[in-house]
Length: 94
Image (cartoon, rainbow, N blue to C red):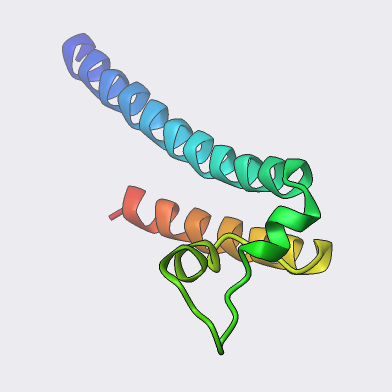
């Protein structure tokens, strides 16, 4: 019985470490996006916004990371945290 219990506890510890690592990765990405938003000068942010009448590769790529204002940023952060946490939990328990 002791060997079975030790084996079970070993698996549980490993799984918990993986789940905590997943949460750490998710929150690290969110924090990185927030830091980038507040440390990037507004002029640089404006230059990276995709304009429909004159697109280029840089603005097409950066369009996914540029936010118009704090409300836009926080809405995207909330959506990212909710969806990625949900997916992490679903993948963890399946």
